[in-house]
Length: 571
Image (cartoon, rainbow, N blue to C red; front, side, top):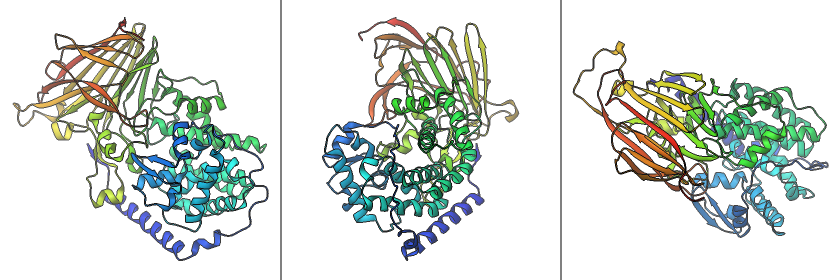
């Protein structure tokens, strides 16, 4: 393990917060007024931009009836902006207007009028600067959503004026946004609002920001520095919207944006499981399949997925209709780790378009009470020692309030090897996330047969030779290997207690077996599909490890397998 948060990090965080406070104070005293005036652009919304992002008509219908449900809270009111917010995350979701496209997607003639009414309600309460509602992180999302709703804004000078004012203010405030995705969203917001307002100055400001941020945030293999598959899809989607806007204006897409699109598309394909959704790692869920399809189809570069993403730290095996994606990297560091998970050496498995082994996952729709729990190693399909995570968060208190919920300790060394043969593909990975606390390293070996019907694994715990003998040779460490199952998978124990039968949603059968001790089926939860948390189950194999050895024999070595049986149940 290594300490990731140093004295200089605290100083930088304090400096950012101080500058943000000064900026907000000046605006509260009237400094924002200089950008809250100006004439409405006469050519605003002269053309419409197509929104390729997915929608939820069920959510839209609820909003049409005055019911707003975000992050586990519900507010019933025709003017929600006039009411106290149930939580900060609820307020963020409401003020961002991410739900606007859901409302407009309703097959109801009253939806556009209700959308306009809600925009007017926001203008009524927040047209003048407000430190929360006008924060750059929220303003950027709101501007993107407003720019993609021409039916609500066209021919309405007051609404266009509100959009215009916020765009001009965002140009000044975006430098105070948190480093990372929020700044990318700010650049996209400025370019899109500049496009619909026909204001080239705004568009160029957004382009300059993206020219700076894209090289910082998009890695060579196309992944985002957060290592979250869902973030890669969001960035690809946002850049595709810019690509479309530039085409509408008969302009070539700026070179750095165009190159980023071409770089990100292959890794989005890399992260897709058999059902078309994403694997769930580092704070993201399955995503919207239609959005992914549209983003990939908007500019078909002919690129194909690959097997190893070295910068992002993932391995992918695809064989006989089975797909396995394994996390073989360290969690993100710095500000980007605020949503990272302790998932090193966890994997997800799908076959025949159906998910089998998953991680608990997360989406922003979920209740905040789940957030910290699903970031722990135990919420992933991998091994834990003494219920301890392989990466640890900054404890609650002033340090977390200043730095955010980032990791302060995580593995120092994570290694991975891959060997492809005619009979199948081998992966071997190890990490030292438990070395400092327990003196042991975790090694995972995986083999997926060429026909996709035989997945074999081995988990070993070993003490490095250079560390010398342990202080207490009689000490034992209890460990658990977890395999979280998708909610559509039904699991039942065999009589021998060493295996389990799994039946997928299409009736296909798989058998899990192990040599590591009795198999247990316990309750779990799945949050990656969005909506409310779903009950599911997990296979758990537990044992006790010795504090020494090479991890090549029991009890420090456990072998396991998932093997396809064929159809054993109904469709």
